[in-house]
Length: 313
Ligand code: B12
Image (cartoon, rainbow, N blue to C red):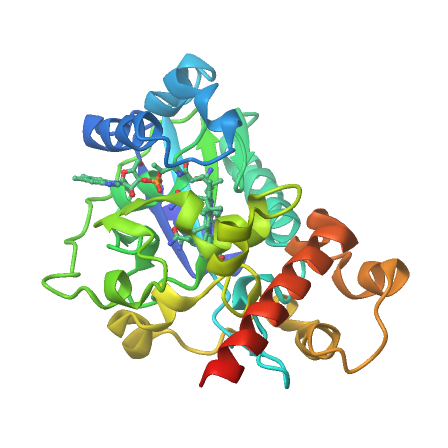
């Protein structure tokens, strides 16, 4: 029989920054919060979120063999990219695509676990599938979901990705930790679009990250104004978090910072841009999937707003 400590040793050997274990069933409070979010239409155009509601409540609806959930955190803290023209780009997307990096690492973890536990079942999720990843991470004791709606990892801060591995073996679960946001509302007050309606509840249609990353097609004129000077993702509600000031250290996973300079040059128009250059700079990053046209839409809109504001100041 393998135990939780043996599994955690394997995970750490594979260089994840934190690991926790929980049950496959999520506490009902997460599901209620998720339903409330959908009912209010805060998911914007992400209709795919409507289709997988039961599985989000209990992942065993789809994977009946799952007996435990292993959750890992991967620290990507680096710096928000600011170009010479004032445009900004989120720090989570300046390196290799975390979906691929974490999936490969978890594949190796699963194979190492199988070496000692035999041919057990496993299924990996990274930002994919019918999984409330932050809720699992919180339930596994890795940190707490902050008022800004992201998981604030204990001793790590919120600049971390989450990976999930369902396992068919039963393992001792970890205990959730306390929510340490207290009375602080810096993230709520800092969002220029007041996108955080109440603690943990985000209206995507006002969220810069949603507008620049997930929103397809042209911007309506009211939407364009909401992206301010951000061209991909947004770090505002995390940059102001006191826990990040205290814990977020420069990340040692070099793979998450590889393209920082090229991206700064690209959004700052230091060099010519076209489809081929877009591909060369962004292909391996999370931003590659939005394509040249959407990046151009974002840059054009952000520059216009930024210039208008500068004129008024
Ligand atoms: C859809 C999505 C988005 C959407 C919606 C974001 C959101 N807050 O839900 C958009 C495009 C806006 C987005 C943006 C970002 N995302 Co995103 N996103 C996702 C995705 C695919 C699904 C999240 C989801 O289901 N949301 C629906 C809401 C309702 O669920 P929830 O946020 O988990 O809400 C729970 C809690 O807030 C809690 N809750 C809420 N209210 C209340 C109230 C009470 C009383 C209680 C008890 C609980 C509670 O319960 C809810 C249900 O579990 C996840 C990956 C995944 N499969 O989980 C990544 C994920 C959340 N994203 C991630 C990242 C990195 C980002 C950005 C930081 C990127 C950036 N810099 O631009 C921003 C952060 C914006 C923000 N402030 O949230 C990471 C977050 C890592 C972390 N440390 O938390 C994830 C986990 C991907 C990953 N594998 O690493 N994202």
